[in-house]
Length: 102
View 1 (cartoon, rainbow, N blue to C red):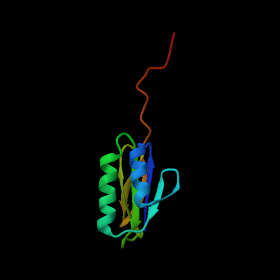
View 2 (cartoon, rainbow, N blue to C red):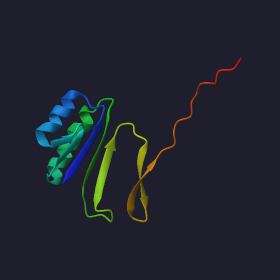
View 3 (cartoon, rainbow, N blue to C red):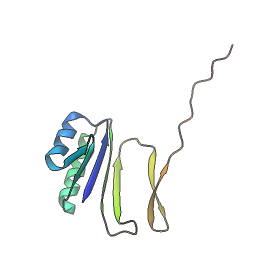
View 4 (cartoon, rainbow, N blue to C red):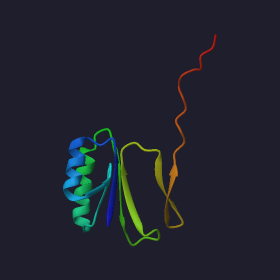
């Protein structure tokens, strides 16, 4: 099984993903494909994502039981913790503007 979640994806990518996968919620696609087809779907996703972002997760023989890849700007990042893949949030960007003062 594999899952792809998109944010701000262009309509042509959403339509393309809907050809291969079931869209169970807006921007959430699921299906069951082998590695070769999964890699082909992800390749087309990375080519068509434009300014959006996406993550794909699939069942894998890891300690976590899954693996994932992401493309685009997102606050989440994968980290390895003793063989487990965990997700942590990157810190918020500091504002570059000076506060208004008189």
